[in-house]
Amino acid sequence: MVIFQKIFAIIVGSFILGIGINGFIVPHHLLDGGIIGIGLIIHYYYSFPTGLSMIVLSIPLYIIAWYFNRKYFFYSIHGLIVSSLLIDILSFMRSQFELGILPSAIIGGMLVGTGIGLMLRYETSTGGTDLVAQMLSKVFSLNVGILIFLIDGLVILSGLKIVGLEKFMYSFITIIFVGLMTSLTVRKADA
Image 1 (spheres, rainbow, N blue to C red):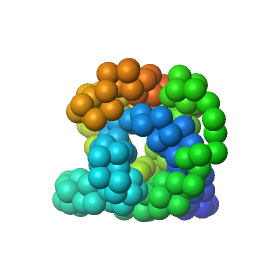
Image 2: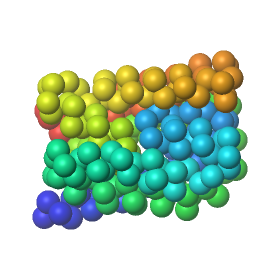
Image 3: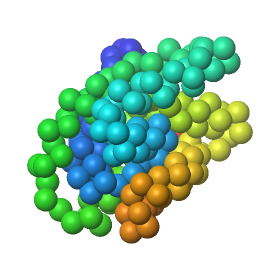
Image 4: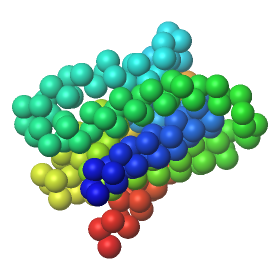
């Protein structure tokens, strides 16, 4: 039964994540944090597929997870592959919603946070910095959503030059909602 819950969380969480990225974040050239954010920076700069970038960028983190905590390696490798594929497959959604930048930043952040939180709730993830945050949250007893928020802030700060100050500010709003929704989604499992 647990394996089916993980599969469900990976598929549904990745689908929600893909809609958030493609339907709301990419159309306004906003950033998310973590490996997704770095993948978006690469996409905006080089037009390289975001999901494929995520896989390539996650390889060193998975090597670390293999040596230090294989449970996280095995629990998140499927989430990385499925979420990366769905982000690239759902790229057609980039022209589906015609919302302003502020509602897109909020809705995109809420969807991404819900997708990530759903996977983390069932001890799987998209890998990347979510994997790092998940491992650190167990070691230091910190909320995984807060850790993701801090990492995400560093990533969008590194993308400031690419997106500009205005979109940086909206990207910051996005990661606030990613962290909030991740925390709320994971917390419901803890309650």
